[in-house]
Length: 300
Image (cartoon, rainbow, N blue to C red; front, side, top):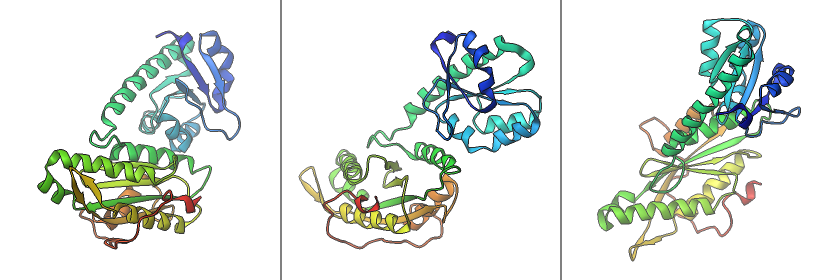
């Protein structure tokens, strides 16, 4: 892989290396103040002191960039503990300034290739094959990226978990092929009732999650819950048979109910009875009329 084929985004103090890296063959990009990084091949950050290394490891910006980019840190000092913290935050490579431009160039190329292989593996295992939706791990990753950005833009977001009752009965009555078709139809119904910016994910065999990436207040999430449950309670026809389902639903809101993806999912899932965790099943078991508009039109 040639450096001439790679675009390198320089963040913070790393912008001072622009001329050197351009001479090494990289296409250089710099961010505008306050703007999130567009998709580039790699991101270079620089830490001149141990304090700067510690700050980088704790910054949401590094973790958010690492989701889709190969992040490389140019460090002026060596510190095993801080380097381990940077790697845990998502850094692909750490290069000592004293190693020079050639070592940095090679580290960036290698980091990009590792990220490419990681992305390919993640894509292969990121989709629930029965519905075509992202699965739990992909949902957690996407939520983590959004939450890292909330450090700069503290906007509420909501996570809904819907546990469906009746899928096992449908499988026993109609067979597994029909049950898989029913899950696909449910996924389409959920997706059609939401904004393009919202995310629907599959949680195992009998549950779905809906991520509302931006809300004005808690009431927005509750309105979406009621609209989705009304939609799901409308019968579906599969293999010539009418299938009626009921949904037990949980709602978790950031930052009121948690500040990380896993805790928000655990809370919403517990409310829906999806996991064996104490919680109140909210919004469950009430049949209502179907909604004719997108589920969160009122949440805009």
